[in-house]
Every structure is written in C-alpha cells, then in structure tokens.
Amino acid sequence: FLQMREAEELTDVTLVFGDRRLPCHKVILAGMCEYFHRMFLTDMMECYSKEIVMKDINASTGVLLVDYFYTQKIDITTNNAQDLLEASDMLLIDTLKHNVEEFLCNQADKSNCISLLNLAQFYDLKLLLKETESILHDLQVNDLIDTEEVHLLSEKHLHVYVIGGNDGQSVLKSVDALDMWTLEWSSLPHMPQPLQCPYVVFVSNKLFVLGGLHGCMDPMEWSEDVYEYDSTSKTWHKRTPMPEQCPDGAAVALGDQIYVVGGSNRSCMEYNPHMDSWLHLQ
Image (cartoon, rainbow, N blue to C red; front, side, top):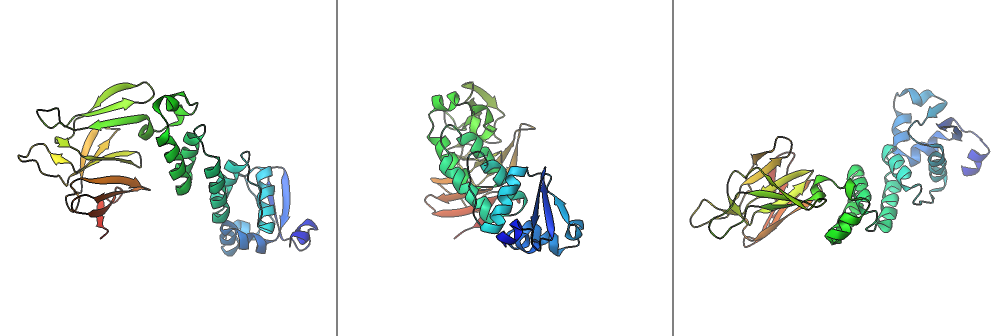
C-alpha cells in the first residue's frame, strides 16, 4: 500500500494539511485510525468527499501521520512531540498517543516537569502525570522558585496548606496557606469544626479535608466527616461522610478519586468527588 500511495494508485481520498495534499486509501486510514473509521462508516459529509481538510493539524505533522498510517513507524522528537500528542488525541490514535507519552516521560526533568505536568493533566496522561509529580515533589523549595516554569503551576502546587491541629490548649479549626512563590502566609475561612490530624487531599483542583480527631468531643473521637473547600465562594461544604472511621490511616488522590486506606481498621475506601459517593474496596 505504501508503494501504491506513492504512485497514487487506487487512492480514493486526499487529506489536506495546510498547503500539503496527500492522496491516501480510505481502507488504510480506517484501519489505522478510529477517527477515520467512524467518519467513513457514518453518514458524515466527509464520507462522500474526495478531499478532507484537516484544519487543526499542520503540514509537517500531517506528513508524519500519513507515513505512520502506512508504515507503523514514526520518529518522535522534542520538536514534534506536542503536535503529535495533540493530533493523536484528536484522531483517537491510542497507540501513537501512548508512544508520545512514553517519549515525554523519558524527557521529563526539573527544567520542564511543570509544563509537562500541565500537559499530562490536559490530555489525561497518567504515566506522565505520575513521573512529573514525582520530579516536582523531589524539588527543594529554592529549586522550585528558581525554575523558569514556576508561573505555570496550578494552585494545587503553588500552596502548602496547614489545616487544624492543636496549639497545646485546644484543637483548632484554622486553615492557613503558604504561597510557595512569595513565601507569604494567608488565612482561609475556618473549617466548620475543629480537627486534629485530618487527612488533606487536593484533587481535580479542589481541596478536601477528611476524618481527623473531633476537637469538640471529650474524649476526642475520630471523625468520619468530609469537607470540600470552594475557593471561588471561599466557603466550606459538608460532603457524604466516610463509611467508617479510619484512625491513623492515610488519604491519597489517584486520578479523580480519593482513597482512604490503612489505619487500625485496615480500611480501604474510595471516594468519587463528582458523584459525592463512597465505595468499600474490601
């Protein structure tokens, strides 16, 4: 088929990338790309067209893609990786998208981890997200501030939160945030109740406080309550409580979910912030 394309033998559609016109075979495009497969099997206007204009893909990327469709080979470089990522995401080419992600993981370091982290979040690249967050977490504060990409950090990565605690006399419901760029502290609205040792998780650009020791009970007991902070309205909202207490455990974010695990109860619970629902995993 590659030789037939080069000789323009039996080609039945032309892809137009900017000023480049590339004759192709529909059967190859449909077999290699889910985007074209759906296009040619539905009643879309392009299904009957002899030319398909690819408005959002530049000419050099278009040439690489068509060659990839016919050879299953492509040279991913630092110069074309982001364009290939955008194109593979748009055209639903999962294998190529994964290959680009692996390439970016190998390129990630402290000089580019913030921009790559944002890229990973935008395109839902879980491997790249894990790699860049690991690099970011290992950076010292001075290294982070000195990097040229610090302005690209989201609120999640620009602040350190200190929530609740104990001042030696009483349990606190205060919330303070350290701006990692200016190294200045600011106070947020107090939590609805005082808590000591709560679990704090930032997921989907939202701050969640889970569990902890009730400050208003004597003796203190572990809380099952869950609170979400709305940074727009600067208010706290109570969410569905945890199914059980989790003393001395931990909470982590993975993808768009929150997991509360371990502790003396050997808990394993999953929280879906979008649905405001809990699931026992054991």
